[in-house]
Length: 305
Image 1 (cartoon, helix red, strand yellow):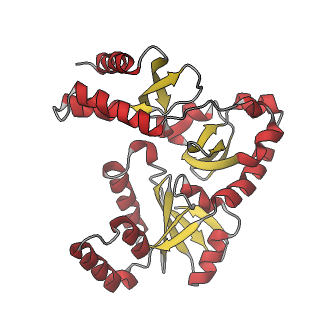
Image 2 (image 1 turned 90 degrees about the horizontal axis):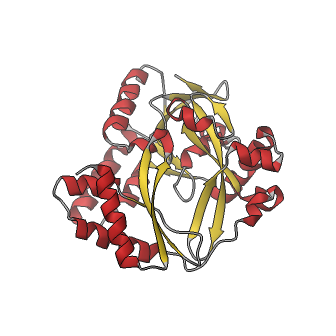
Image 3 (image 1 turned 45 degrees about the horizontal axis):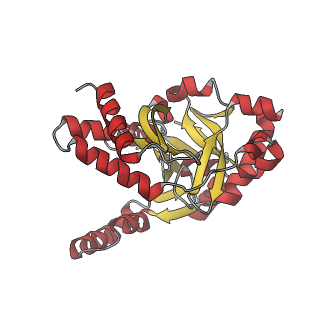
């Protein structure tokens, strides 16, 4: 079955389940790095907000025989009911810059992989990356959502990219903060030490941690946290703390790894590792870069190797 036929069938079945008070749509959603996903939304008559449920992975499971259409529709309905918001959000404040400026933050994306997107959004280039901007919506009913800021918004607000960056730079550090953990602590969080086997793995890693003293840098919610490398003085303070220069490895858009470096002899090996992991382990839309970066303590700046 073709993907378009599959999404049409899912939409029709969801419409039957949802009832006449809902409008069900399939929309193409452009994600990071040029990835386009098909998202299903269910909009109730008195609401202007809905969770987007992406159907691409359902189609893969359906084609491989791992699920049925009925199971897909059941899962979509369950997902919607768990995440729906029973009210509308007033978006009129988004028309006024003074109303939204305190919620504007930035994130990092890969420049080459997002050429089409960057034509339509304000951005600041940084090495082989670009800083883009979004507005955070905080709501007690659905948590945090974000709206990507486009060139049309800047025109409406009559604000320059330079001013937008200054505002976002302060807001991102204040609203999202940063979190710097040892690799061991990061792995502890992932494993949560639920079994004896996992505890044994932790014990082994602790014994060998000194061989690879790596650190994980992200923001406090660990979403889009690679942008922490832009924070004023953060990398310089880390260099002072460890007493030398270090590599910055782009693990994903959500985090980077900091690795103290005695020399640059191992850089080709690390570059190869980054490329392999991006090709095999990281979702396409979450890749930040295949590059390796180096913070030079003496120069006080981040370089692309």
